[in-house]
Length: 570
Image (cartoon, rainbow, N blue to C red; front, side):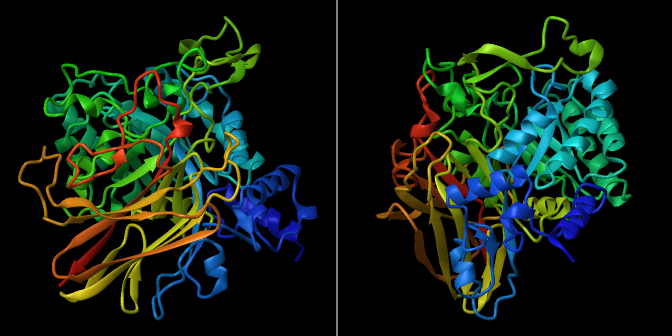
């Protein structure tokens, strides 16, 4: 069978109601360059240039499999006797807006084309939930998404929406593609969106409506209306309205098999917003320049309304809210996204004064303006923020399952090319999101392999990883106070200085004989801006610094974060 015939077959399954399980043609070493389309060849050339494609494999793409092949990908070979299997590490973005958002501008194909150009394997279109969108927008955007799936067959394009969570902030909601994707999203938005239902205030009734919405999505999966559905909280600390008890309630709303709410943006979009004027907006990274309001959770400190090294305060604070959730021993994952609405230094504007979103459910197509716009704060998908998901295949189902399992790490500015991490005990091992079940007193080792940046990022410099931190915390079980947002038993336990600029870095850290449940997670930095963490030097001696409103060039302060792994001795 020729490559062209096989490729056509994959295309049919990839963008229909079924899943593909093969690599995209641009990543498939068995497909020669001359058989690629121009867009596929461009993508392969980009991956080679940036060091993400070499020796016939995508760097940072394959976990497991013994020997040199696994090592060449920047991932750790499985421990001897381990049945960890292999993963494709697929980069994506779950928070993207188009002309079908009241404050958006671009066509679906514009966002997908740029995402594909900047190395995205999967994207979620998440136009704002509102009365107009629920009335006509959900249906009208779908043909554009279907067309983009066909035009960019090496990129998985999900349909979702940005949910106005009743009683809280925003969240990404998306479903597995299929014949009911529009009807399920439309009913969900109509019945459970805080804007549509005028349910934005922080009241018990509105919080209950949010839980009902998550239960509705779980029911659609159970009834097989859609194959899967997920929710991730967006920019959770931006306005202080996502209280700790609400986050816990979302996480625990549905049974683990059909868990819908699985995590939050560890780093928000709008990262260009901190570029100083006159070369930028001169605002805050993430547009995190708010103050408490009547609906904000009163316990949050003022510094929670700012980003730290571009990351949300809930994530960046060692021993803070994210760690308090992880210390319960329950999954809650982080991501990083563009929240792309209006792109910094772009030349497009909305099509004209006749653009009537309320009447048409969309803005007119963008047109060339004749000038570069430096007043916007967003980047294209993949240009700056990346969420890497360990998937069992190149398919919609596998991406969703990888997110739910927590096989996720995130980075800014292409700080690193690949990350492999395992907790090991003898022949047993787990990777990101996993739990290692061992006998009490077993010796546990953390083994990390990092592929450094092997080429320039999209700002045209090669970033340098300066340090990697190991963060460890005790698992103390469910909290009695659902509004707890600190834990006293989490801290940076080891820091590794990185003394090379290219190639692969291999690190190991011994947890010793583990007698009680613990978790570990990883963090890395270019070292340009660090400060003592909010919990003090004994907890975090050199964490991310508070971003300065109006003076926060995102390219001068790069970090990566991993999701956690647990050790559960019995």
